[in-house]
Structures are given as C-alpha cells and as structure tokens.
Amino acid sequence: MKTCGRGAVVALLTALSALATAASAEANPRLVVDINSLKVYEQQDIFQRWYPASLTKLMTAYTTFRAIKSGQLTLDSPVVMTKNAAAEPPSKMFFKPGSKMTLDSALKMMLIKSANDIAVAIGETVAGSEPAFVAQMNAEAARIGMSNSHFVNPNGLPAPGQYTTARDLAVLAITIKREFPQYAPYFAYEGFTTGKKSYPNYNMLIGRFDGADGMKTGFICASGFNQVSSATRNGRSVVSVVLGAESLGARADESARLMQMALTENGAAKPSLGQIAPYGETRDVTADISKQICSASAAKVRSEGRDEAGRQKLLSPFIHEINRPLQLVEAGLIPGSVPAAADAGGPAEGQGDLANIPIPQPKPAL
Image (tube, rainbow, N blue to C red; front, side, top):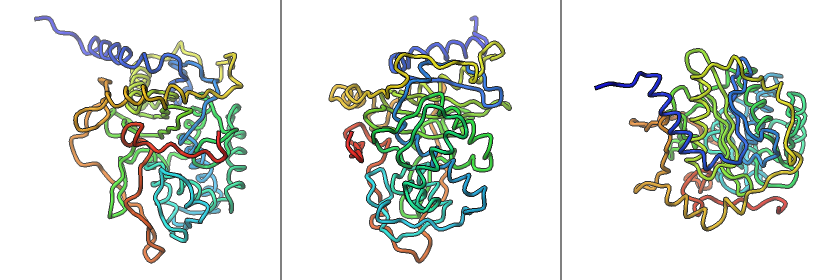
C-alpha cells in the first residue's frame, strides 16, 4: 500500500485547516508575519480599523515594561486596587479596594485572566491615574509606528475613539517580542493559581500548538473574537493577528492555520510589513460587527460548536489536547494586605458560550 510522505501529509492538513476556518475568516482582518525578517506570509484588510477589546492589554503591558526599563518600577513594586479600578466590569479579580499585589502578580492576572480591574490598577500604578496612563499608551503607540491606533482605557472595554488595526497589532506584538524578550513568559503561561482557585489561559494555542508562546485574546460584541498569537520553531518566530472571528474556536483554528503556514513555507518572495501600503476604502471607519456576533442565531451556532462536556470544539489539525495537568504559576495578593472580596472571581472573557460571556457596559455607552 502506498503511503504519503510527510510533506504531503502536512499539505493535506493545511488544506483541511483552511477549509475549516474559511467561513469565519472570509471578510475579517488577519495576517501572519515573521518576527525577524518582517516578511508577511498572508494578509487581509490589515488597515481596517477594529475595536481591540482585550488586545488593548498588550499595549498596557508594553507601556508597563517601558516603565520598568526606565527604573520607575520593578516587578516587586506594589499595585494597589483602587475604588476606580475595582469598579470595572468583568472579567475581573473582584479584589477589594486597598488590596495589594506585586506588579509581577498583576501582570499574570491581566494577561492570563484578562482582568479589567487589574489592568486599570496597573495603569494607575505606572502613571498615577488612568487618564495619565492612557496618554502614555498613545504616546508609546505613536512612537513605535502604530499609525492607526488610539486607546481610551487600559483594558479594552468598549468606548468611542478606541481602535486599532491588524497591522498595528502586529507592530506592537513584534516590538514586545524584540524589545522585551525577558518578559516573554508572561504571554506563554498556561494559567495561574491564587492558592484557592486556578485560572487557565484563554489562548487555546498555549500548550496545544507546537511552539506556541503567546500572546493575547479579546472579545466584545463590536469586535468579535480577536487573537494575537506567536510561535517559535526551529529558530523561526512568527506572529499572527486574527480579528472578528465568530467564536473562541474559530479564532484559535485560524491562528493555528496562519502560523503553521508561515512556519513551514519559504517567505523569500513575500513582501515585508513595511512594504505594504495602506489600502481599503473604510480604513478610517471602525468596523462594528455586533449584529453578527451578539445575535441569537450566532449564539446558537456557538452553542452547537461545543462538545458534550461544554468545551469549544477545535477543528484545526494543528491543535492537540493537553493530556496532563496545566502548568500553573502563582499569583495573588501580598500576604497581610486586604483580602479579596470574592477570590472565586466571576465570569471571564472566553468562558462558556455567549450567554456566559459578560457583555461589558460601555463607558461611555456606544
């Protein structure tokens, strides 16, 4: 019996993955780029303005790393939960105002659980107030070349004037990877534990896609399901951006397809990120796909995309199950500080179907 070679098998798997994710990726921004060469292997609508949702926390992290680099803070610096931060909607840690944690713990909670209250508390610690920190975020974005992005809060909750593009998110992710390799583990943890409760990473590629090492997911109705991913294999590193996917599984499947392709193909003839000129008639209008994402019919489709245990079905042949306990890091309050109001936490970005995902109340309303 004739058998297929490894190359043919990989090609077949890639084709199957492409078919499985084509519907969800049909008209939404996406790209994948090599971190070292900046070669773009695939791209679509990368200059279309999009709501970043919790991908905003990548900029919050980057701005914080810059503060650490300047000597303003250390990873052991205390982060205090203020009344302003504690008032943020879920996903959150539900810590009482006055609670204290190290910056190290705060970064883990923000990047793994996508905690909105922690993001604001970090910003206030870095800059003294939330508005001052947002000003720093925008200054950093402009400095590194994010030419079509603007932030209005540190956590990505929906608000007018907050937007980015797939191209700009790739610039941000690559900058983080290049400038702060020492902080790479924050984006690759499988989860964390407070000692009372464990929180898995909502990035479904971590531990499941060979070489996956980051970075962040996000969701609001207006943006759909977003994901910035990174992976390293055989000395090559790539970053992918997927915006507006229809579900948790769809964004993971498409991210896996993009990165698998970029990690296994020759990019010599591909254009570099800087060579792609802005395009698209609607690049100055922020897309809003709320009607497609937060409709009853869309929720039904997502519900049908779960297995009997309620887990999101993944269709990509490049994503495998984790058949072991998650590797968790520790994160929690500083001993002796004010205890958490409800350490068990609340619903979080990425849990359950749409009915179980809190729809954040915009500040101000959209």
